[in-house]
Length: 482
Image (cartoon, rainbow, N blue to C red; front, top):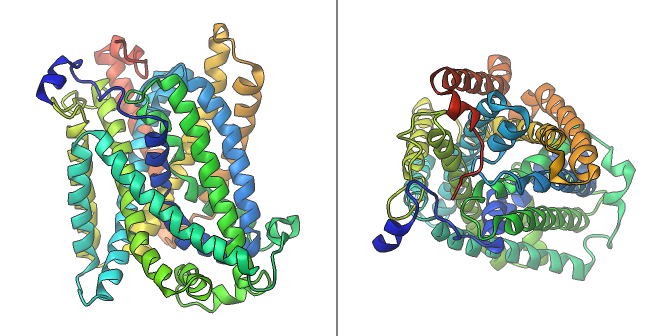
């Protein structure tokens, strides 16, 4: 391994280490499919539009596919592990790139650390059933340690672990889906969840926000551009595969969950549960047996672990690139001499996670209602804001580079439409933030305000770089030269 690393370019991520399948599973694991199905979907149904949630998944899937068209078209011209940051820098200028870099670091850190709270709580509950009673934060710290080791090493090791975990998640849910499909559910199969009347019932805006939160992570395909095999082919394929696999899986499962409970009985059933996240396990007991439910309980924990590992890898690369390109201290932007991983950035993220989890534990705050809910909603807002920036960046980049020879539908019309859609969704998140996160008063304003604060810090860092190193400032987000 040492001999190989000595022949590799200095301070580079490990090239040609990830194929389409590896990248697809890396980003699907960030979306944590079992977590979204067991946790996000019942809550989205209860707080949003009931059975119409399946139809909402369909709408969001289509919107994200439209976003992916421009995102993929520009990915061929980016080739930088900074992803959203690189898009902003190339399309909107280096100042926008600096703002987006800090927004990305905030968003993915918030998502990873927030999910650590739910992971700790879920693991504590699982092991308590086996007679091992430990506080939630003990399990969170164990997870932080495991993720730190895997994030420090080469990325393909993480990809192999995530592939196995995600396949198991899909398997158990698909077994339940098939069981409900075979029996016809509570009152027979029905297309009612896809009807417009169901989709717009209740609070469809909140349903849309829950659906978007379930997809967070798919957009990270471009983060692995420097480590992909033939990235101009691999990244587009992985992006489309991720959206389609995640979207179809969520839509199908949400439909069968509604059918399994009965379209008319769904909301009363959810309202009668002390914890709506037990809804999927109740359906499993009813249609597939307790053995599958027990397997689901274990895989729910592994799903959360897969998610935090994937988000750790994402944020480590954003921190690394920001250091490599001098936006942050250059000592951060280095790779390991053997593993070619962003090891310093990985350690920084692990320490930050430990500090925040420790703070919430010391203050006695709830790991789910506070740590998970507050931070993951900040992350969702931040990622959707970056999607809006990326959509606008696509339009501006191709306007400035007509020689790229891409058609207007891919480079102007669809990115323009998705930019408008994302701006509307950002507005909906901000005005509904208190209801979504459970954070009221000062926190209801401060938490979404963190997104703006991060962007301002990024602008200040970019401005400082422009003063001390104009060449580095100009080269922010540029593809690496071999």
